[in-house]
Length: 233
Image (tube, rainbow, N blue to C red; front, side, top):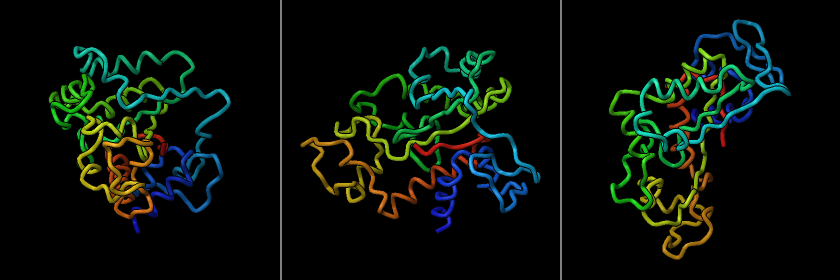
C-alpha cells in the first residue's frame, strides 16, 4: 500500500517541482494546502509555477545521446551536451532513463547492456551505457547537475509500459523479468511467435506484481536523483 499511495500522489501532483523532497521526506514543510498547477510549498512559501506559456521543454529519449560517438561517453561529453541548450530559451529538459531496461545501472531493473550479447538488434546504445558505467559515471546525475549550472530545470520522464518492438523474440530491449512472467502480460501467455499488437504483450497494471515492479523503479529514481519533477509517460 505504501508504494501505491506514493504512485497516486505522483499522478495527482505531476506538475509540481521538487516532488522528490516530498517523496523522500526531505524535512521540508509542504503544508497541507497546494494550489493546482503550482510547485509544492517549500519552507512555507509557494514557488513559481513549473511552466508558463514561454516554457520550452527538450525531451531526451532513453537512447538518443547513447547512440553517439564512443569518445563522447565521458563526463565532459555529457556536460557539453547539456550546455548546448544554454543561452537560449530552453527552460526544461525531461530525461528518460528507461524503456523496459534502464540506461543506467539500476538496482531494481535490468540495465540495457545486460541483454544477451547476441540479442536481436543490439547496438551501440548498450555499449556506450556500459562504457559510462565502467568509468564510474552516472549520466543522469551529471546531466541534472549541469542543468542546474545552466539554469535549466531537470525533470525525469519514466516509461510506464514500454512495448517498442516487443514482438521480436529475444529483442535486446525487453527484460528477462518480462519474458519470465507471461502471466503478467495484458494477454497472458500469448504466443510471441505469432506476432500481433505490441500492446497485447504490455504489462497488465491490474496485477499487483506489475505495479510493485514499476513502483520500485520510481522509488529508486526519487532516492537517487535530485530532479525538479517527474512525468509518468
